[in-house]
Length: 183
Image (cartoon, rainbow, N blue to C red; front, side, top):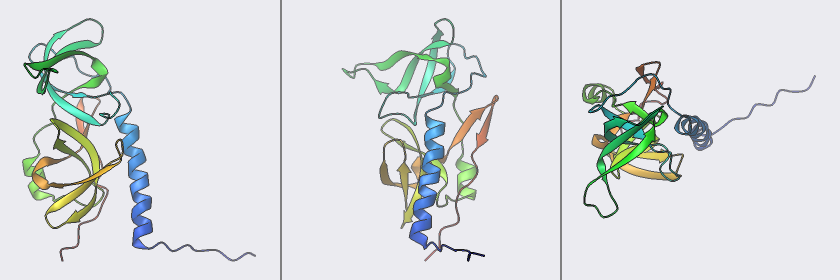
């Protein structure tokens, strides 16, 4: 009988493995289309998931201007401007790119500090970007964005737990990590 080989991983190896696994999960979520489970009407506040290369995994707050036929909406972005910066950007998007605005999380966040590997959205560059916490240094959380490969530090006030719109309701993704050591 052959001996059983046991492989021991140090923290850094385990950390890299977790980062790869979570990155794959986030990419699969970011690249899929939203379920169309809700019809929006003029004036509804929504988030639009960008499907543009370099922006996949980001969400931008917008207002529905009108329905433009089968599974399309004209939206007016709250934070994105036209090229000449003279007016809010307006464009036609597919219904699969649109979801309701997630509920406010301030109470949830204050009660449940972020943990290593938690999937979060970061408010930066006029939108919410989907990533996960890869490290904490001082009061800042490093967030890794699998769709861009960036790992950037942010204060907690620009973070929210990532949620997915599924079957007509908001779903919190399972917490991935562990509590940071406080030393």
